[in-house]
Image 1 (cartoon, one colour):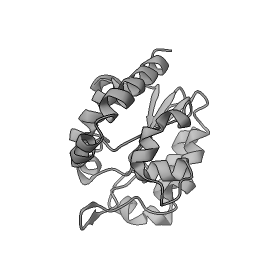
Image 2 (cartoon, rainbow, N blue to C red; image 1 turned 90 degrees about the horizontal axis):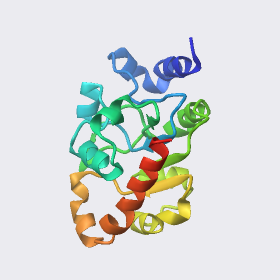
Image 3 (cartoon, rainbow, N blue to C red; image 1 turned 180 degrees about the vertical axis):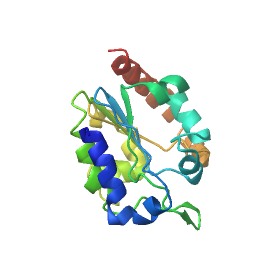
Image 4 (cartoon, rainbow, N blue to C red; image 1 turned 60 degrees about the vertical axis):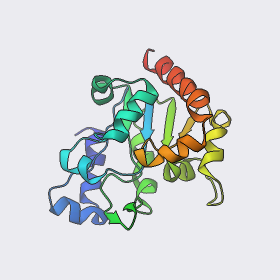
Length: 194
């Protein structure tokens, strides 16, 4: 059994995930020894969990457009890893999905990242990933973090969540598309074509 498989089995066996495992639900993420870019989002939505395909929704379509990664490459390239802050759908809240469970990323992310020695860039999608990886206080505004994305390069690229729910944010922050997305696309393509 290779190290990735060992970690996968350990995640399933963790008491924190017992209910999912008992219901035949597997952790949803994607890792490869050769991965150079890792997309770190929130947690799978119910649609992703039921289909077994992460980012298989309008948010995923927009994310692929923003990064310049076509669907085939997104799901089948060993250069791309996808590790959400929680590998399971956390449930429905009053206004959307519940947040990723506390302590989950701390337990599993570094173990997986340690097995990907070629990793060059972590794309931090949404406030949960940004607060965790950039060690931000709860006072830090996502808008300011994204506006200052260059200060986190070359290791991290903070990004607003591509959900259609953020259309209002995008309309209010008209600098985002012309200033941030071309840089994201350029960096992603540069790394993916190595």
